[in-house]
Amino acid sequence: MRILEVVLLLFVSIFLGSLFVDIGNPDSHPFEYVAAKPPKGIQSSFFTRETIHFESKGLQIEAFVYFPVSEDERKYPLVIMAPDIGLQKDVVLEKFASVFVSHEMAVLTFDYRYFGGSEGLPRHTISVSRQIEDFHAAIRFVTQNTTAPFLKQIDIDKIALWGTGFSAGHVLSVASDLSRAENKNISAIVIQNPYVDGISTILSSPISISARLILLGVKDLLLSFFGNNHYIPLASSSQLSVLGFSIESELYSALIPPTSNWVNKVPARGALEFLLYRPILKADSVKYPTLVVYSESDTISKSYDVEKVISILPQVTSLKKKGGHINNYVGSDQEHVALEEVSFLEKHLR
Image 1 (cartoon, one colour):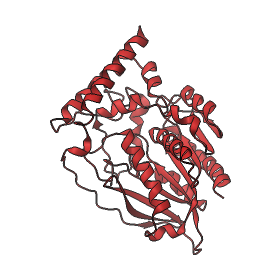
Image 2 (cartoon, rainbow, N blue to C red):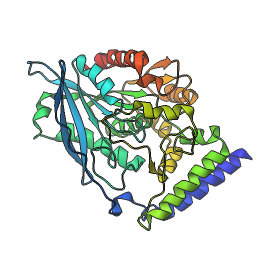
Image 3 (cartoon, rainbow, N blue to C red):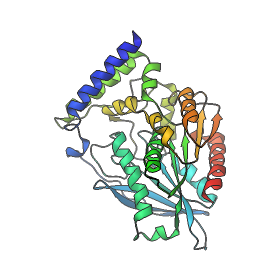
Image 4 (cartoon, rainbow, N blue to C red):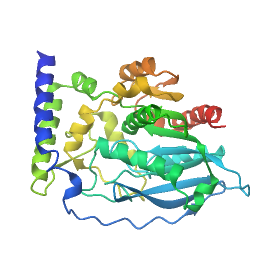
C-alpha cells in the first residue's frame, strides 16, 4: 500500500506540475532583486580571488576565480565547483578551493541563477534544469571565451568538475551530457556526498512528510501564476523544510559565514525538484574518471543510494567516511577529504 500511495502522490504532483510549469516559470515575474555589492578581489599569501561574471540564458552569473600566487606565467588545470542545494558559493566552497589552489590548481566557483550574486527572480528558486544550464554555461565560458584575460592562465584541456550534495547530482548529469558529446576538455569529476535518487528519498521518508512537501510544491506553482510564492525553509529540524525534518539539516546554519547574504528559505516548488531528481539514471553514461566521497551516516544523501551509483559508474574511485552529510564540510574531516580529492585531481589533471 505504501508504494501505491507514493506512486499516486508522484502522479498527482507531476500532472499538476506539468499543467503549471509554464505559468510558474520563475523568469516571468518581476519580483524585487537587489544585487549584492560585488565583492572586491582578495589576495592571501598563496592565492588570489577575482570576481567575474558570465552569461547563462540571458542572466549574469557571478563567479569567483582563484589562482595560486606565483610569478610563473604557466597555465593551470581548473576545477569548476558549485554549491550544495539552496546554498551559495560563499558557503563551504572556499575551504576546498583554497586547498586546491595551494596545490597549483585554479578554481572557479559560481552561484546558480536566483542565488547569491547571480541574477534571476524570484530569489532562492531551486530549478534542476536551470542549474544544469548554468553549469554548462560555466564550462562554455572557460573553454570557448577568448576575451577574458584570466583565461590565458587556464589549461582548457585539464578541467575537473566538482559538486557536493545536490550539485554532485548535477555534475553527474553534466558529465553524462559531455560524455555523450565526446567533450575532451573534462579530465575528471569529483562528487561528494552526492544526492542521486529522489524516489529513494520519498520511499525512505514518512509518507506524511513526502505528501506535505509535494502538496506545498504544487501550491507554490499555483501561487506563482498570480505573482506570488510560498516559501519554506531549506533546512530545519523543527518545521517542515525541503530537506525534511532532519537534525543534520539544521546544522546547515552553522556553515554560513557572517558575511553571507544567504537566507534559509526557498519557494516550495523546490521540494518537487528535490524529490523527483534522479541523476542516478545518468551514471552509466559518464565516461570520465570519477571520485565519489560519501558518508556512512548521511541522512540526506543515503549511503546505499551512493553505493548503487558507485556500482554503475564505469571509471570510479570511492572513499567512504564516517559521520554524516555535514561532517565533510567542517574541521579535520573537511581537511582530510580535501587532501584526498587533491590526490585524485593531481593524478588526472597533470
